[in-house]
Every structure is written in structure tokens, then in C-alpha cells.
Amino acid sequence: MLPILVGVVPFGMIYGLSAVGAGLPALAAQAMSSVVFAGSAQFIAAQLIHDAAPAAAVLATIFLVNLRHALYSASVAPYVKDLGGGWKGILAYLLTDEAFAVAISRYQRDAEAVEPSPHRHWYFLGAGLALWTSWQLSTAVGIFFGAAVPRGWSLDFALPLTFIALVLPSLRSRAGGAAAVSAGVVAVLAAGLPYKLGLMLAAAAGIAAGLIAGKEDA
Amino acid sequence: MSWMPVLALAGLITFATRLSFIALLGHARMPPLLARALRLVPPAVLSAIILPELVLRGGALDLSPRNPRLGAGLLAAAVALATRSVLLTIAIGLVALWGLQALLG
Image 1 (cartoon, rainbow over the protein chains, first blue to last red):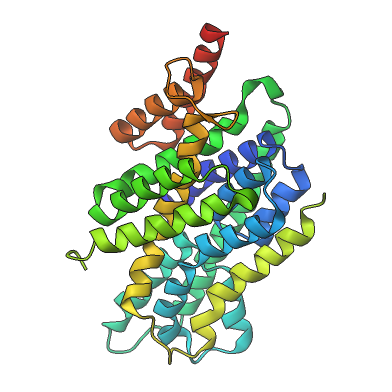
Image 2 (cartoon, each protein chain N blue to C red; image 1 turned 90 degrees about the vertical axis):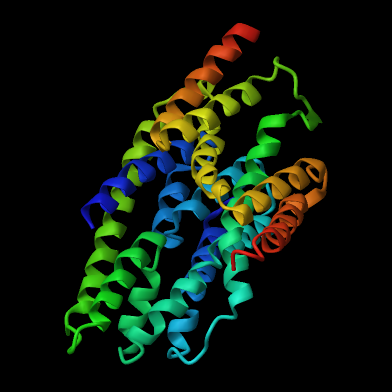
């Protein structure tokens, strides 16, 4: 758990720093961390707002990028099915990539035991709250420093640089590589389309190419 | 314009996505093809944002060495591959951009 928290803090700071650098008001940057609470979608939304994308394009992209959380939802659903509505709501709100990784490994370990621990949901909740608190605080620190950095420093470039660091590991798989390369090329070709439609077109092309390229691996 | 209503809506959409299968009481299963497609969304979207950012200048393709964002981005990619460190990638990429901007005027 601790290594994940240590990994989240610099990310939150980079997010706060680059969101303000990309021109988001401090309050909006912080609100996004508490309301949306999803690392990569927040970085991408900051980039789109920086590019003056229409609201509908920002929403559609956040939806698309966070759709994989439905996968997490499906994976933890059998373990939490007997919980009350309040529990389900809170755990769903806290279901980020990191919380999912921590919670699902605990549930699976627990499933092998003769009698599942009654505390396993508290573990999920505790991990989620720890991640949530680190994310809010580190965002605030990033915003604080970002507001002090002069415009001429091109801090908005920290966003694509973060994306480069995030995307390169996925290029190792055939499917991920095909998806990234096709999406990138289509995005450049379709950059002139209005309403950021090029981004949606590129994402669709990338996913299709990745599905075809990854057929044998599946 | 104020982004607050948009962010509120984005939060609702994200929450609904995370709640979806949990609310279905574990009865529904995700089709494997859809699951594979969803895993490909992040690399596709990230790359679709990165590439135009690096190779387009004022809407036109610029693959020349005089494009500072392309040079800085390529160096950052090399750093990311070699070190796998997000912080180093950003730090070296930003310093490279400042250096190239100063050099190219």
C-alpha cells in the first residue's frame, strides 16, 4: 500500500502544477481532483481545456478514458454484492486504478481462505480514503507552486511529457503499440476537424488497430 | 466560461461508470472483446494527444529540427524508455524545451 501512496503524491503535484500551467483556474483544478478523482482523465481534461476544446468534447473524452473503470467495477462486484447501498456508493467513488489494484489483490487472497475476513471491505475503504487524501493534498501543493511559475516557462508542456512517460510502457505489447501508433497518426491527419472530433476518430482507429493486432494474444 | 458545471457532470459520469457493475449485484459479466477494447483506450487517447502536440505548429506539420517541442518530446521519450521515471521524463523534457527555445530563438 505504502509504495502506491508514494507513487501517487508526485503525480498529484504534477497534475496541480501542469493544470494551472495549462490555464485552469486553481479552484477548477482542485475541484476536478475531488469530483472526478481519476488521474489520467484529469491530465487529459486539463490538456483539452488548455486547447480550448468544447465542453462536450471534454466530457466525451473523460467518459471514454474512464470507461475502463467499468472493468474494475465488474471485477469487484461479486465481492461487494452483499454490502448496503451506502458502502457500494462510497467504494465506487473511490474505485481508481490504484484502489482497484490494492482491493482486488486483497479480495482474491481472501477468497482462498476458508473463512473470508469480515474486515476486507474496511481494507478497501481505508486504502481508497488514503489514496483520496494524498491525491487532494498533493494536488493542492502542485497548484500552489504552479501559480508561482511564470507563463514563459511553458509549464503546459508538462502535460504531453507526462503522457509520453505513461504511454511508452504500453508500447511493449503488440496490441498497445498498434493502438498508440495508429491513434497518433490519425490524430495528426485529423487535427483540422472541428470540436476535437479528430481525437475521437483517432481513439476509435487506435482501438480497432489494437484489437486486430492483439488477436493472437487474447 | 466556467468549467465547474462541466466538471460536476464529468464527476457524475465517472462515478456512474465505477458503480455500474457493482450496482448490478455481480450478475452481469463484461464481454471479453469489450474488456480488451477498454484496456486499449488509454494508450490510444494519450498517443492521439501527444503526437499532434509534438509535430504540429500552428496547425501545420513541422518535422524540422527547428521545432523545439518535437526535439524535446523525442528526448523525453528516450528518457522514459531508459529510466521509466515519470519525474525524470518531465524534468529533462522541460529543460530540453527551454534550451531549444533559447537556441532557436
